[in-house]
Length: 79
Image (cartoon, rainbow, N blue to C red):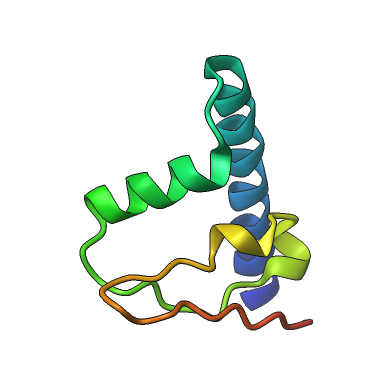
């Protein structure tokens, strides 16, 4: 069951990341900065990891976000 959930999460994030970066390119904005601005606007808590950056195929800069003075650390892991 966990393998199914992990595969679904990885596919979900990869697809969202591809669309988000494509849209950013179309409108001429930098994707990491745009992502950070949107997270700060709608998410008022610290992002909690670890984030599976190896399988998500999403640059770790997206997760290196400081929220309320707390640094977000990316912890890569393998299954």
